[in-house]
Image (cartoon, rainbow over all chains, first blue to last red; front, side, top):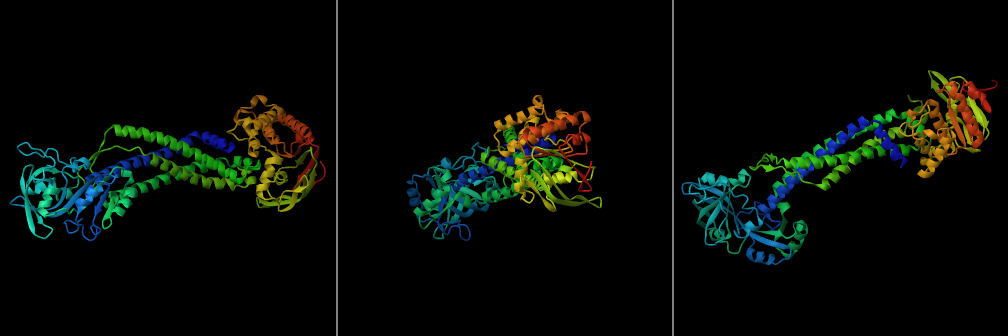
Length: 414
Length: 222
């Protein structure tokens, strides 16, 4: 422990220099941990958006569903999807199964027709497990005063929810009567009349211009779907078990493909990769700055203590112990820097979150969001360990320099 | 106790060959011996060779009859830590440690428990008359007090041999003489051998043995 005590005293010897180095470590910790909290918020938002946007935790689909072009008709469907859904609802790990039909066709207002991508859902179950109500556009009211509402659960009622851009291109609003046209499973052209129940804003312009949602009953009539379903979205009771449940449910359902949400949410994966690249580079630069600042501090400290090191070596200190002395100095810098950095992070995080700052809409989306930097102990630990390792590495060079000093030359050093 | 046999260590200094050449001498146990000679005569070089701080080009150093100069660096470190003590002209105390901590340092490096190291360090400082300066940092001590602290540090581990390089050179005459008296007393009291490099007449006057050096060689006479 004598070396640790000596190391601590040496750091206190040059207080201003030590304080400056600590500030670099604290700034590095602060930047990386706040970035980690911001990333966690973003990933959480994106994963929630993907899961509650319709994917669920797991999706059951025909094995060929992801081969070639993505299925937008019942060509690639689970032939008896409803029976499969009923069976899965008996599984103790499953909270709910939401069958869906994906289809495409033309939507006509009479004078104008626009191509659409449609999704049929169970209007009663969907709002209980998905965020479909969140995307209903506020203020989309007809002159008569009717605002956006969700689809009626009555199978006899033919209604549609339109993407805001799609409604605009048709000049439609809540209450408008439109005609859906598509092909049945047998390839025959079919049409049903629907009333616009609401408009939705999904946050992406490309989606808003193309998508619509109807009930399974409406789609069933249009497509002559029978019990066939494109996909089954499974909501698990324990979302954290998604990966394990995927394997188990896949084993229960041979002849189908069971995919977890994170394999299907390509936007989530792309954003995650992008963030890792951006913040990874930023982290690398910060670690480099910390490395250089610490090397500078410890090297200056070594150069000022050459004679002292000579005396310590003359007294019998082994070269390895001199190396340890410098490592102890690095250890104290890292521990103190990380502790101060953690305190600064918690304070700044609380302050920023209390300001309720509105962040601009990310590229390709139409919604801004409130900044809410997450508390991420795992990230703080990783940053602290990374900084500590960087500092210990930076102490290596000055330590080796000190350990290699020739005693007689060190004693002559002025 | 200490025996140097045919020691040669040569180096270039200002374009000229300097060092020590074929020096042989023996210092008995409990003796205060002085290496005397003018500047550049090789006193410090010889002291460093005897203290295992440097390796000779030729010859060897024997400590208690054991050849030690050719030992690996790790073992020489260990010998310096446990059997040798050093006193330097510029005191060379660790500035961030108190007088007590400076004296405890070699003991703690040996692995002596803190309480025991503290007890022995306090006794050592008391012996050199610094019982009331235990917690003073080197910067708060006079030159004489610092050098006495350095002597206490050198003696605390009970070494066989204490090597002192110009210990009085940074002190005025009023402090240099008493310091040498103290060293002579400690040599007699503890049975430790002192080898001191100095050209100070006050030091030479107190020596049991004087070895005179000139141009890196031992010479006869005063």
